[in-house]
Image (cartoon, rainbow, N blue to C red; front, side):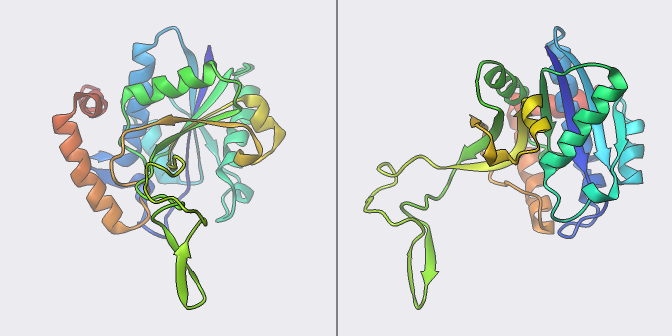
Length: 251
């Protein structure tokens, strides 16, 4: 199997200043994503792969050029793909197109890992690759169990009153349909889907479940601080999380 791993990140950030190049527990935040890929490839030597960074950040490019783990190709993002409303899937398509030109390869799968999701386990990548390989779905993405359910205990304003987000007669969480949070950590795509130019929910989707760390997105400064506290706890007490940081320490 030939996999293209993509890592995408813009310069700057409106929520957390320069979050894509910030240090996270003494290492650059994006190194945790690269460490997860590096460890996966060390443990799955039969996989052929390339890793590519797509960015408009000079600082992020330098971080990856200087990384101690493995070579990463760089695509300097064109301005049209760096807008606030640019869907990430368009950037990943650009990665696939450019890397096929450079390498003269055809990839069986494209796996995107988000820079701002440092809390992954090796099994999370293994699970999504396995699920995508054995599925007819065009996209597989990672989720966590939702803490709230719009059929049961989520409400919205309707004039002067509040009502359930989705009208139902369910009296317990167990009766309501299962709901998941997209945690934006890992996506696996069929190349044909990316070339089609469709958006994610215009394709057929499947999921893999990940451990719920309690922090889904790094959008605000307090998210960054809270995730570091949770990460320190998990790195010290859970060997599956700890080995990703351990791989960093050993490089």
